[in-house]
Length: 535
Image 1: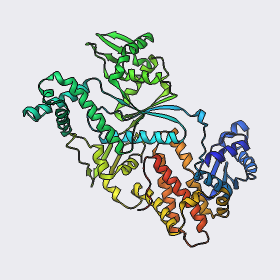
Image 2 (image 1 turned 120 degrees about the vertical axis):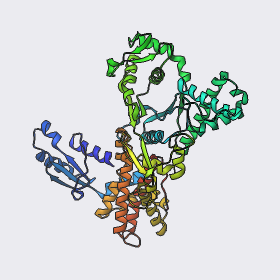
Image 3 (image 1 turned 180 degrees about the vertical axis):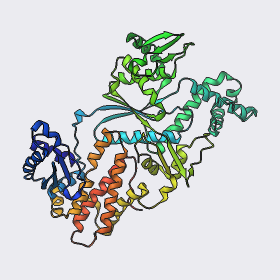
Image 4 (image 1 turned 30 degrees about the vertical axis):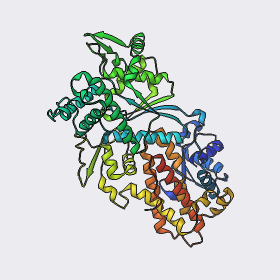
């Protein structure tokens, strides 16, 4: 609806407008500020507003126009709203870009080391990335999702050693206390037991089997990570192995050297990252010839950019903030444009239960496992709560608040609005399917003389497309949650202040309420949440 009326107004006025929502709802559905045109048109905003209003008041899509302090306020006509609503129900949502203009995006997120189960810190970035991908694809962007598996280097060797010492306890009754340099937690002993069943007791006789234990542990943990993600509806188009990519190290290093991006000092190889804003140059090869963690990321980003996407989005934990400059410097020295890489940061989450910190998992040591929280509150509640705030801001909530059946619980509040609408249709003995199948002419006719409060509710329900566009372009999925919460609030207010069934306006009201339900259901679906039809 927003894009449709904007294009009509822009064509009529010969300008590129920005439409706002008036603070005072009685002024109209939209307000067009004219201040930005004063310099080019050499007129006072109030005069421009008067001229614009005269041109707009004859449009069939607009019911009324008024001018206040340089703003052109206008109300949309019932016929135009009805047409937009019918097209929305038919899945014909307008877009501000043609398909050919949509970017081809490589979105990488989660990418947690395959050395342990996913904890709650990983979950926020996982849910955010998946929802961003869902919204982008719905809007027509070509999005390819990827998980970078950090399966080379010290952390995998540490996992193998941890399994080895746990296995020594299981097979030879050695101390159950793992060395301090090992990963801790019951899951290590579970891995050791699985390795024993798969590889036999001989895998723990000496350290010659460490390579086999490294691979075994990596594969088992990656399988578990995939299961953890599937539990909240997340899957990836591809998983890329760091270990496999190291076959491209020599050619990557040659590329860096060709662009004069590295130098040798103190028997180390350094990246000249300060040339692109980093606080200091970074080591990419140690004295012993071993590549650093950064080297693996450089190889991976070269591999990414060689695949020629229009844009690359990485979702990292907030503790990686200082890592951005060095990676972008490497991209420049590889001969690519670093501005094509966009890094989004996700802050950690603080979970409470009954006002005290959520219990950490003994299985994984001092971590709150994502699986434990999902088992406790459900995938839908976890997703919606994790998406309720900007990803780069601190998030704290008490899981017991999700038991509340009031406006303080957005999971309940939004779903209850949808369930109320479904209940109304059931009581009216009218199938929602019939509303979806209605002809445009009959649908437009049913809203011909809709009252103001019903039109306002319809305008809000038709605002989903604009919200989705803004949420994706600004990378702020929480805007969708905020919108759904506001729409649910308007529905609840309308429901409690307006008699609906067995009134002369019943047909009109239900014709609008199905649009509200459609917006809630679609909005939740794009957040990875299944809308409830009964409560």
